Length: 378
Image 1 (cartoon, rainbow, N blue to C red):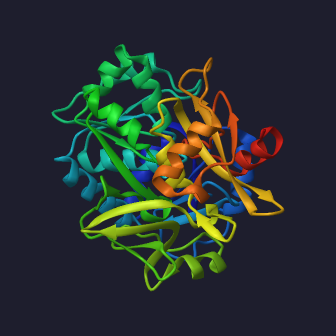
Image 2: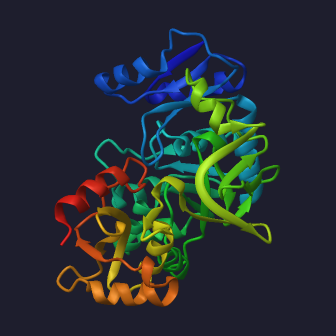
């Protein structure tokens, strides 16, 4: 049985599901959005496999699908996370519970036996509201989880928001790649930040600061895609056996992320479907983004490919400048990338914007990014 739940009742419904009760489908509060989601997830149709949660996910591109997660997977993730962080604690929920990152804050709170403090996100994220809510989180250990965009805003706030952020014993940051420059900035400010890598299919973050959680194994396959095994892995996609067959192989989740594992440390190089083939050579946007993020004139950056009749595709950088009055030049960006990655990876186009297009949890909206560059590139 699959029960759609929204709002305050979600915690109790999730606790029941983890104890063997009906599976939960977190739904948004809006009636129209809820109807669209239920039309895809079909709560009236019996579950194909036992599950405690069906969490909608679409990644950075693609149509919505529901990852079915057993209670054992959710609990294994929560317990391993608490062990890694130093023990159970009180949580500030600052993420939507229609996403696995928000759900896991609830699961960890249930495991710890401490009710989370929830930040009101109905009007968007506010540094002042974050600071006020953080002040009410009471426990020997205190945790929160954020996406990079929220971290940037709190660092920029520099006042009560940043002070509240520094008061937590650990601040998990995931949902999208955390640029090295942002990580360094947070650490320099005194934030006990922990970078996470994972997805709905792995019950949330399964790699912390590059190291897999206890019982989790991460290895690249022959194509360079990372695969994840262990007790946190999902049991399939709701009503999509075709997707399950290619994504769940011999009990391992085959991600669409390219990466490597060296000396036990997992490194993610970007999405397989984001790779730009230019002049017959492959360029990973994530690698170029990492280099450009270190440019002094760049506050945020995303890289995509645009069709080109001669090269097949060209590399284009979309930049939020550190100083809007003096954005970086294409020549300076090309020089920095050429030095570190070679001339073929250097962007041949530049689009300057006020904000990068993002999805709900802060991931770059790659479809919107491609539309943006096709309209504005100069």
